[in-house]
Every structure is written in structure tokens, then in C-alpha cells.
Image (cartoon, rainbow, N blue to C red; front, side):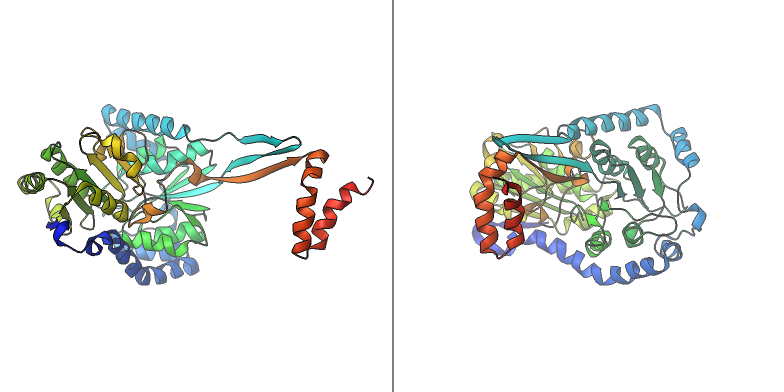
Length: 429
């Protein structure tokens, strides 16, 4: 962990830290491109090849798709408590995302005879990437599929990498079923992104790919954009905590550790106005790390961690420049600075709003932009699975009111037929 005093450092040296996250993704494009090309050319054969190479699992064309029986059997290995947790999380996610759902048709009369609005339609087929392999992330199945369900998407598929024994985790399969997955495929990595983007004999091409992944998966998503749509780069996890002397250093340390355990490429940053808090958090992290079951991953992640001391105003400017995936505000009266927060994927306000509860239980989405992309992207939401057509309904009186404007501008642009299409409707007058 690096301790930084902003008063003794060039501000520009740290503000671009999140961009360095994306540099790793850009570096992975060179490795991802030939894999994508081979998936495009050879389909299932290439899928089988790369699943054996990267996951150590030998697939055949007829077992790339997880059978319906296997999905149903996954419940048998789960406790009632685990199933109920998945179902409650599902209900909370649906409840929150239903608040985002627009009306199918929205119309307003702007002036007499001129009615304008929007027609919303869901996408027809989407693919969700759910990380897996060495770990299981059933929550990502819920978070990627349920907004699509709320939006009304007709077909929803999941690709997730198998573990070394070739199986998909029971919790992930149950979560996929609970979230309404139509098909689940046991392929991951760059090859899964290619399959959903180009289509194979087994896996149909989708319209949009969503979901988090490592740097290779994120690079692959960026490369196939244009063949299919993606939501945004959702790469290695990030957390920035803004804390002052009113915080509990134990809370801060536990939340930083929680994000650091995602992977060695996770980025965690503490921004604080208190040198005492900075030192206390550092000690708490040292004391707690070794007892955690992912301590080695955490230690690797913490090599990149930053503990930054500064004045609140400059720290707020810094967090806006970093544009983190997750932002926690553990300061006195955190609501008072919300108007100053411009760039963050998700904001957790107060001492009792840890990032972990948003990862699983509140209902807000945990698929969020990383690598500084929160400056231009929002987290995954219902609108990611919908498209909007503008509606324009004019009466003859309404058209007459806009006739002169239309004719003048079309004539300026030299588009005579445009002007004539208006005049045609008034030629009897």
C-alpha cells in the first residue's frame, strides 16, 4: 500500500490511476483478436479448442450447452436458506429496476396539432457473461439477466466458464434459472465473447453482450463492438472510499479488503482528511489480511492500493477524476456533498452502506463501468436492454404551423423534394 500526501505530490501523478486500469485491457486486445477471429471462422471447434487450452476441460459439441436436467438438479445441492437468498435478491433487483421502466408509449401534445413522444421496445436476444471457473458469481447471473427480464427481452443466454471438473457451480446454475436464463453454456473467456458476437452452431449470435469479466474478457467485448453492442467496459473491480475523522477505521479497512479480494488486479483507494484515520486503516488492513481465505489475492491487490491524505475539496476533485466503479462516503453529513460527486458508477452513502450489500442484496445493479468509464457511462440498467423510437403525430393544422420553417431550411440545404413534400399537402389551398 502506498501512502500519498497530496500536499507533497503533483496532482496529475495520481488522477489518471484508473486510466492505467484500462491500459491493461488495451494490452490484452492483441492476445484476444486471433482467438475471436478463430471463433468466427471455426465456431464450435474453436470453442472446444480454447476451452481445453484455458480451462483444462474437454467439451464436445453436444455438451457445450448445460442441459435443462442439470440446471434443475442444481437445486438439490443447495440449502433452503441459499435458495431463499437468491430468490430474495431476485425480488429486490426486480423491484428496483421496475422503477426505471418507461411506459411502452409516451406522448405529449407540445402545441395544438403537434404530438411528440417515444415508443420503447426491448431487444430480442441478449447474452450475459458470468465469471466462473475458479470461483462462482451467482450474483452476476442475477444482475445481468433480471434487468433484461424487466425490460421484456425475449431470449436471454449465459456463458460462464467451467471449473476444472467441467461443471458449472450449482449456485450459478440456480441463479441463472431463477433469473430466467433460456440457455446456459459452459464456455468462458474471450472465446465465449466471440461465440455470442459471431454465433456458432451451438450458440446463437446475440444483439448485445453484458456482464463483468477480467481484462481479456473486457478487451474481447471492446473488439466485437460493432458486430454486437456491449454495455460498457466492466473490468477489474475498483473502490474509492472518502473518509474523515468521524469514520470507523475498521469499517473502512473491511470494505477495502472486500474489494481487494475480487482479484489481484482490483484497485482500492482511501481518500482521507485525517492522518490518524490513514494510519489506523493501514494497521487494520495488516492485522486482518492473513486471516482471510483469499489472503494471497488480497496481498497482490494491495500492492497497487493507495492511501491518500488531503483536504476534502481536493479529494473530491480527485475522486471525480478517478471516476471509480464504487464510491463510499464515510464522512460527517455525507448527503451534503452529493451535488459535488460527478463521476462514480455506484455511490454508497454513510457508515452502514458497504459496497458488499450493493453487490448482492439492495437491488441496485453491481455491473458498473470501470477504468474511468464512469465519466461517460452509467451502471447496467433497464434502458441497456431497450431501444427508443421517436413518435411524431401531426394534424394538418400542426403541419401548417411548421410549414414555413421546414420549407426555408430544406431550400437552404438544396433539398427541393423535401420542400415539395410539405407543399404537396397544401396544394388544394
